[in-house]
Each structure stands twice: as C-alpha cells, then as structure tokens.
Length: 340
Image (tube, rainbow, N blue to C red; front, side, top):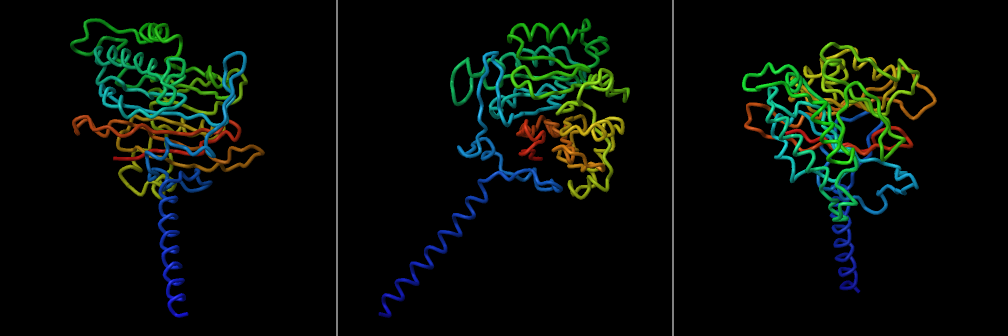
C-alpha cells in the first residue's frame, strides 16, 4: 500500500515538473498582443517565433477577381537608415507583405550608394517566398521607399565625387518599371496599397520633414486620414511619455523632434507612425488619445525603425522591425523591434 502511494506521489511530482516546463516553453514561444496602454516590453519579444505563426494565428487571405487580397492582418517589414549597408540585411530579411525603407539608404549623398540600393531593392523584389518557392509568390508583394536627409543632396550634386546630380524620381521610375510597379518612391503622397486596398499610407518627402511642413493630402482634399504615416524625421513626444517606456534618458532625447508631425498624427488619430533619422532613439512609444471617439483607434503607436546602430560601429545593423497590422481593427497587434 505504501509502495503504491509512493509511486503515485512520484508520478504526481513528475507531471507537475512537466507542466511547469511546458508553461515556460509556451510562454517563451508565444507572441503577445500589443497591450492597450503599455509598450515597454514590446522590444523584448523573441525574434524567431514572430515569423512562425501557428495555424490558429495565421490570418486568412482570399484573392478577388481584380487580384487584390482580402486579408485580416498585413505584415510590414521596416528598415531605415541603412547608409549603404543594405546588403548586410539580405539574409536576415523576414518574409512579409510589404517592405518599407524610411530613408537614408545613402551615406552623405553617395551616388554609388543610391545606384547600389536601387539594384538591391530590384533584386529583393524578385526573391520568391520562403514557403512557396515560386516567382508568383514573392517575398514581398510591395516595396515602399522614402528619401532621407542623406539622400537629398543627390539632387544637387553637392557631394564631392558625384560628377552630376542623380534624379531619384527618374531612378525609381526605372526600378518600378523593372519590378512591374512593385517598388515605389513616396514623396508627399497618400496611396492605397495595390495589394491590400483597405490599407492607406502617407509618405512624406525629406523637404517636408526638414521644413516641418507636411502638405497632407487628406486634409486638403477631404480624404480620411491614412492608417500609417511614414516619414524620415523623428516626432516630438513628451519625456513624461517616452522615458517610462524607453527607460533610457539618452534614447528619450532622441524623441524631441517635430511637434508638427506628432500633432498631426495624434489629432488625426492615425494609428501608426514610423520613422528613423536618430539612430540611438530606436524603439516603440504608445501615445493614448485625449479625446475618445467611437472607433477602434484609442491611441497612436510611434516606431523609430533606424537600422544602422551607429556610423562609428563599422556597420552594425539591427534586425528589421516587423509589424502585424490588423486592417479591421485599424491598429498594430504585434510589433518586433529589438534594440542592439
């Protein structure tokens, strides 16, 4: 009798240990949803598990007769401030729906950097999906590019060694032609995603960023605000908001940028704003709206997606930022933004 009781206790202890181990493994592998008021731990999410959803978490997608996709969640892969080091990202680019570069693909206006980036992004546009292994199923369905302050001097030919100005518009028209329109340069434009028409994005030019003057078409033409605001310049967010979430005084200073940008995003209740420019300010900030309305947008999420850690570090690059954006709820539900 005692032997049976000991055996039972042994098995109970064994099962308890197994349950604890299972809970730890599940907790490590799961990707938590974006919390409603606190994003301090977003960047700590494990990188590899983000790209391997279980069947339960995969969003459904159907294709209409026009070729557009009806999808619940769109995966955005974001890079910025690569400064000529874009090739170092090739092997680490995760699969997604839309790839976005937020500017400064050049280093100090180098023409060779711009031409190299144009060739690189053309190659990326042709890479097939890791799952389908077919040109009909590309790694990215769309690629969006913005210009940054290091790219602006291409127009003027001010950089020593550049024999003549390089017209970025002309360059990216060629890239668009070579990629069947998959790649586009945004300069003060509001667009609908060609693949996901529910998704609207606005991309600001560097001239607008530098002048703190954003000629928003949705204001001028009576359109609805976009889902996503893209810019190269950093916004201004109060330290009382940034410091508790970033837990770094130095990184907090990197969020003291354009008040016009942050005001426009918040007043128009734009769910997501992404930018770069200040490398050491990389991170995620969640800003609740003061006035609640009958919509799903109770806050705006700001993401500094700068890729290159520092010019002085010999080209050390951060992983691409990954955002899963829910088209129905109009908000990001998962964010991966590790910081070196």
